[in-house]
Image (cartoon, rainbow, N blue to C red; front, side):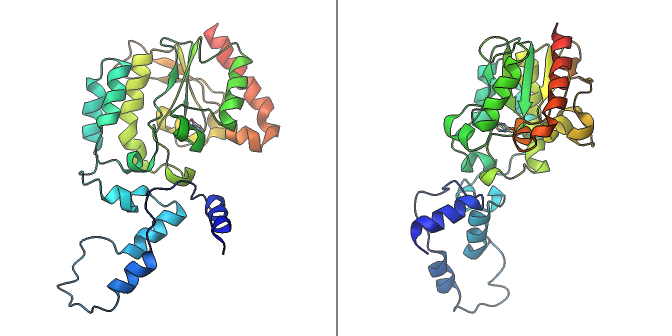
Length: 276
Ligand code: URA
């Protein structure tokens, strides 16, 4: 297959980011490793064989298995370490620095940029999506691709603008490779940071955008079809009082299912009513 066609095929399969500057010939690596028979004792597992790395790279599988992640050398991040780092942040700048200092989190290695958030402090509404996509990862800004443009229009329809009275961020500040869904472990590490983010931004209302954000922030098991448009309360020790929370369909879903836009419009009116 010519190189261009192979690259196009990779992108279609979701492997749309290079995670190493240098090309690796995994066939050569496995051929070199194959002929040397070793005893059981000698073959005690130290690290995964190169062939396993090759599979993880092409399929967009969890970054933990990728070669770059393995070279970071740090102990895996724990929920406890993440909570301590997040709790110590007294400002948004400190929270960003805390995220930058988090060690042992493989998504940091595969992502191009930290996508922290943008908008005004003490906004009317804080929108919280799932995780950055490819455009966001490249630019280091949340919701700037096709779904971001739709979200901007949805916000504008009820008088909201990220430059004036809204704030936008995500549960995960780093892009999962190939836009795969974040794992429960990744969400657990990022949760203390997004909770602190909300407490520091001090919005009047939060709007989880899409099922992952809604379930994570509101501790619910139901999907977005059942959660959207309902008024919940979001509590956190860092907040003086609980905040209203109204989940909204993800704009990426609305781009695929235009028939659901009427429901989204209804939910936007609920949000407008609360901020008025
Ligand atoms: N989808 C999200 O959930 N967040 C973004 O920032 C972009 C797309």
